Image (cartoon, rainbow, N blue to C red):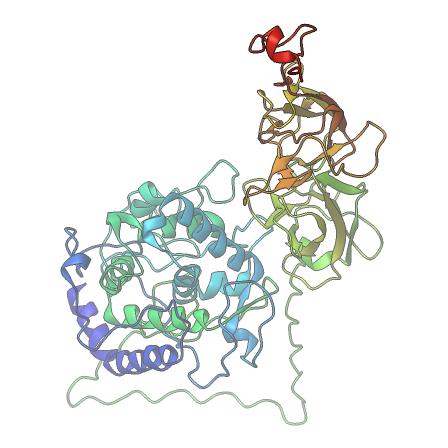
Length: 591
């Protein structure tokens, strides 16, 4: 293995230089989140890891199996960097910048899962795409079934130590079909011993299959995120890639593709990608099924002094007899996949989509895949995407979901939950892997509402003119008997229950500056549907007044407020003379 590995590095010296130039060129005007490195690849103390660096002796994820060495173009136009799926600007060749739809979905789903479970890893989906390109040419150009499984197994060469690593069988041939030696398997080329602990179920079918791109992508993500590596740190990124396949050529090739994809890519139909042409084991043979190259037998040298036996001349054909032209054998027509037979998508009976903010839509979106003759197509993937200015989401908080059609050709989207933004938006259904007209579903989110309001207390609300009410008013909003949280409300002080405008005297609230106000807007019930109003004050007007509270949805409550006149401080006059006056003093002096 060491001799072969050394030969690979010597042969790849020029390739390494070219790949390094590719990374530099692609990074020159990269997106802000692209990590660059200086020429010396400096590592700070904060970047240091206790885990030892990978070495050539490590088997890695692939057993250091051969890989594709093709590099991305350097002079292609640069579209605006984007992490979204869809058409991009620019004129990159589809075979270079495009990634088959299901394969791309697998990479992005795996990266999203790692963002949630291992946020400190900072795994970019473009790294998974780069490894997928280098290891299998994106699953042989996206030749996968609806659930992400490769149409036929992708097997690396037998790791029998002849030109490759020497790894004896570890899985009894369960994955690679070889009970003597191991082989790298699947679109991400895991050897069985690594898959045994790194394998994951990425598509939720209850099993971990290295030949499934969803499972393999998730496994690759966990493999690259082990050891506490932070892939936004240059040193950790280098360690992670080298641990996958220990080769400087491999490192630079993967980095080149990762930067290329970071500058913009788009999805292409499954099966329409092209397979790279050059491999690191010096052979241009396809990666699977991989057959060890058998050298041509070397002719035995003739004995010294001996003579070579002349060859017997061929018997000439009879004159005048024309040779019979051979009939060319027509190439077999490939069997179309279910996706190839889909002519259109249609709405499968989705009801009107309307929900209050924060609620789950009562009906789920469904789409049906059909052939041109109207027959349903099962086992094809339909992607549902939320489009528009909305915070609505599918279960789990996702803005898109991919679903496989059932035997009736129907794909049922996950439950859709309304956010807090009101208004309309669109859910778009697209067939994965083939361009057919999308189906759009219009959805509407209405404001939270209440249909009933009640006071939480029953104490009479009274106050003396010029004073402050002792109790604050608290109400509870409900909708169909359940607490109505986050419902908008308005409180208005009016002269009577049938008054339409706010009063200009009587009880009042205070604004932030302490001035009287008799209408409060922008109020909102809490999660339990409760709303406690601010303190109420009374001016010098006595009488009976009304507090009216209304909510979105039409719920109304009126509360009576009583203001009494203050007690009089003037003494009551007596019938007799004032004690301070004597009878003599009250009489007029005589003349």
